[in-house]
Image (cartoon, rainbow, N blue to C red; front, top):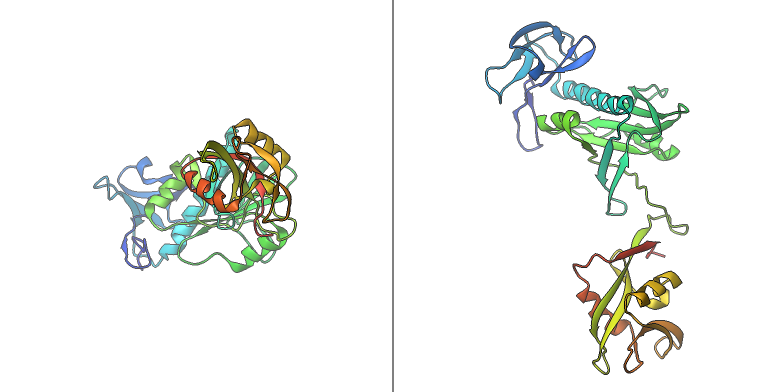
Length: 313
């Protein structure tokens, strides 16, 4: 594979033009040089001189001055991790936040953190004995806080993943599929991780799963018995409807403040006195059977987050 061809997807290949070169130890973009041969612009892999092709705006790129067997994936990986390291270092140096976002496979939520918070140093290919991760972030006390890996076609190093898992160190993958991904590493205000096993939410003390947001809903409707207008409150947690019998005192107080009437009533189904939605007109409780009808009315509503909970145990 020549340097100018890079598989954007697994199913088809398109021309991949190298937009960066090494110059005096730093990366330089094709837009920063004139067209032609540049002895000081070097390939990040073989260190040979490169030619800047700037015949058209869309096709601007660097290419080897002479024939080369440099592996495309390796070159892209080298550029990617250097860009990532430079971006974090620049944010730290300038005292600016650098947001990292990702979709969490664990809790199915979206998270955002500041990569520079409590970080004092960025180390490229940090020596961990038998491992050399792409980018390592170190705290003010020189403690390893986070590992960032750039991936082109291959999967992340399983040894690095195991290292992070054993020591509970956050690991973030940045997969490069096209030239635009390299440009995004340099230009985007926020970084987007393509994969991570890290979830910042607190874990359940029993099952170890990430806790989910508990959201309070107060919905207007009709009493199932007397058909008078009433408001019914419930909690949604990961798609599960939770009735007032499992609501906290603060959640009940907030629900009543918003117009619901939650009182202690005797439930024949549960054979005990329990907190339940109560019709202000006839005084009958609204059980779970009728609660589902009100839950359907809440679709599209935002709800009020009251805390975190676990519905698995």
